[in-house]
Amino acid sequence: MNPQLTWHASLPASRLHAAWAAAAGRAIVDPTLRERVAQPGLALAREMAACGWPAEAAWTHLVALSPGVPNPRELTELVWRKLRGGSCPNEAAVAISGHLRAILAAGDDEAQSARQLELRTRPLRQQWEARGPGLMRALADFTEPDLLVERADVLVVSPATGGDGRAHALYNSVRIEGLLANADPRLPEVVRLGWLLAQLNLELPIFSEQVDQRRLPRLGELATLPAILRAAEEVELARLDAATVQLALDSWHITAPPLAELPALLLSWWSTYQAGRPRWAIALRALDQMLTGG
Image (cartoon, rainbow, N blue to C red; front, side, top):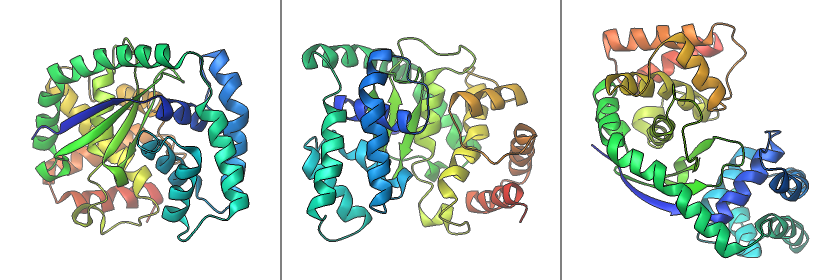
């Protein structure tokens, strides 16, 4: 199965992605962009915390919804309903939408920025159309066909950090920075995109019912890492070895437990999974237990 992708070059998502990165302490490569998004991004993060918004879920909602809801006040009220229910208090709405307005205005020539982002979308899309179908077929062969989504939206955002991306499982979408060339030839961007897409169906009960939902996002990132690297090895895009696993952990900014031998643990788990081929839900539970010592 090859997921049917709809591509979007989104300036609102780009600016919110940059603000998220700044608030998370990531290095923003463009000094002008860093200057414009860092302060409102940090202020927005503080305001969201004061309102009781869980940070990761809030940023996911904001980035994923922003292409279709670019109005800051409407976006604020929509995310409030999703996270808290009911109507957003006016004081909170004014504060959050004000920070959003500053972030969304953090650019120069809108038309030129939009053209540049469209240009940045083309290389990744062309590479995906050439190599993505084979990569995802291999992923289905090495895991389960139902792990692959039928369709998804790809939000291509400006390269705020020089290479990053996140899955939005609730919205069946991913965001990925549009690089004109691979950040590292050992780990092409199409493999990063495949890894993000591989996470979208993990919230289905058939896959996630046996693990703590609070740990599922991080667990999904880690479980799909050796899976996508094995698929990439099959189609000669990357290797599945300890060095490449560590490279992916670092380059893809995966939040992982502080384990000194994490690449070895992931490779051991993957080897056991391939030998027995249990249901993916059982394999996820086993990895969760290995990571938590349960």
